[in-house]
Amino acid sequence: MGEVDQILVRARFFAGVKTNTELGELLQIPYKTLDGWKTRGHIPEKRIAQIALTLGIRRDVLVSDNKERERDAAFMR
Image (cartoon, rainbow, N blue to C red):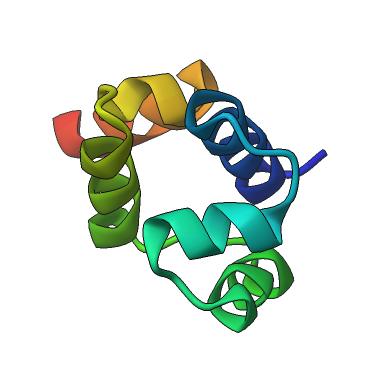
């Protein structure tokens, strides 16, 4: 499972929905946008922050530990 899929699974869990269609409706994000993220394998940082804020959770709850470590390592360079 890719990083985008993992983020969407976590978002669905915290949103209390079962499908990406339901998640999109709740977040007011078109399903085509969610599907595009899956195709590209990337969710824009701004959208991750928006999803976390809407769901009332911290950003790091959505993003895996590996992604956090990569981002921190890149920042330290």
